Amino acid sequence: MYDLIRRLTLRQLALEQVPPFFVALVIAELFYKFHSFLLETGGFLLTWFVLDAAYSSLRRLLQRSRADAAS
Image 1 (cartoon, rainbow, N blue to C red):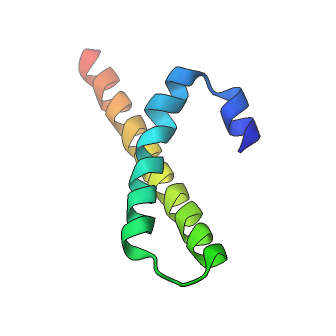
Image 2: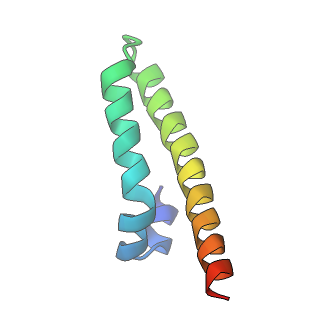
Image 3: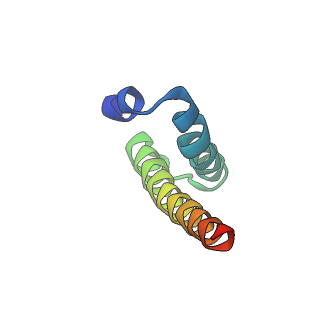
């Protein structure tokens, strides 16, 4: 986590990490009721990981399609 924050600029954090983080936080808050802090935290982190991977893939596809359309 420290490396993530240290290596990315504030703009990158805001554009790349904040949207999946907040969506994962809302999902975890609304749906994860495991009655265990450890399980709920693990579920939140796993959800964040999956959403971030999907969001990054979608951003890459959109950038690639914009580059193809521009050329």
